[in-house]
Image: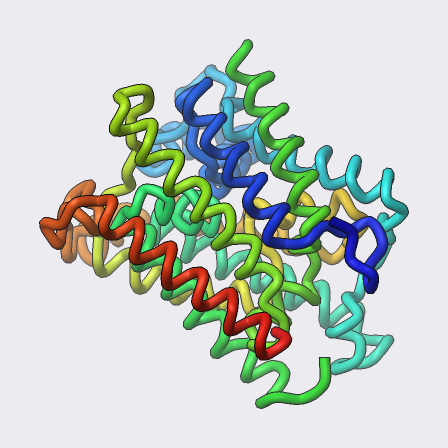
Length: 180
Length: 175
């Protein structure tokens, strides 16, 4: 199912459908649903407790996910690391691995010397995104895929709001219409 | 230990498919949010359709357990909108940010650093939020079929039809 424009890529319907099968197999064999953002809470807590362990132990949010003296590495944490390895494997075997600090679309809009602005925007966006994900109790994996698959009201609500917020900001950054 | 290996293997499969479907990159994520190229929506809804049928089938057969997140209307909506704002800026999701690093997108590292920071900030304000917003509109762990009092297969069928119509529209419009 190769596409002419982009060698090595698969039809997104096929890749998506296969992902659905992987998600179902995961639930059937290990009882685990896809999710990602909780691992960022565990990682932030594990990093923070290297410096201020008492503060992390006393925090009611970190305590939901981390017990003092116990490793925070769990199924989902390994799953998230696996995403990196799987993408690396697919990119390396199809010649589509490319070191890039400024995305093409960003560069066309903000210029080739906008690296620092891109870094700052990515950091700020990442912070805002994760704050929202934890408030909503999930991200496009946990709510968007796992939640919507189960027809959970929480997942459907969150997914719609993810897109509303994203479309608004994309409109502000890039204006209406315009070239890709 | 087996659970950790299972997580790693499942993640590798997911990351492989995300990269093959070309949904990891900033350009694809923003193109969807700019309503120009719906690759990530095609990927996401294809996996949802297959997963939805599979999960409901296996659940009816008693082979699996559902794992629902509590519906908190205030938190789901406000948190979801905040997520969307950040998503439009960073152009990666928590899961896809790692995959983007895997295919060489260095700017995703800044996004990941921001995500860790955002998680730490959330932990600081959680006690205040818990007393206010997080309690609003708690409907418990509920599904759409339960909320509407309709058989789940009817909803599954409606979702499949709507998604297929959406896919056809995307292809017709070249999105």
